[in-house]
Image 1: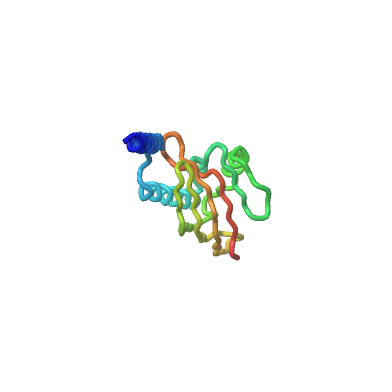
Image 2: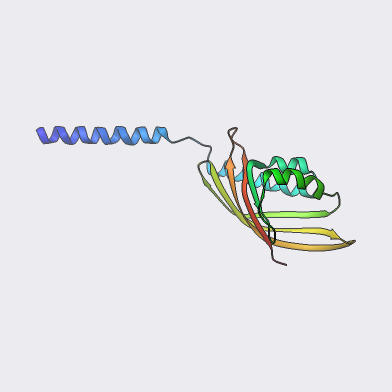
Length: 156
């Protein structure tokens, strides 16, 4: 009888601890909603790039964001704020598509891996570009996702 009582007490304590742990974990919308939001971010990214809308494009970045483009040093958000408005010239990018092949959500963090293609104008000639990317996104206090780290390179 005495051992039975300890078994019940142990089971009750474990159940309470497990319930408490489950209650302590943050409750987020399902992953499908987060994936849809991140896909929407990529659509906005593409549209802003084609429209040469630097303000919208920069709004997709976390204040501590870092871009790691090929062939040059990594650039923090402060450098992006200074350089992007100068670089976004109307008509320079005439089309852009981003296909996020993988989106994985882990609490307030997500990563997105995929491919992109764009049509750019250089010296009056259209140039097709395609490549791949791996991006870490961070959930903001308001629940939105922003780019925290972004690494990409071209296939051509």
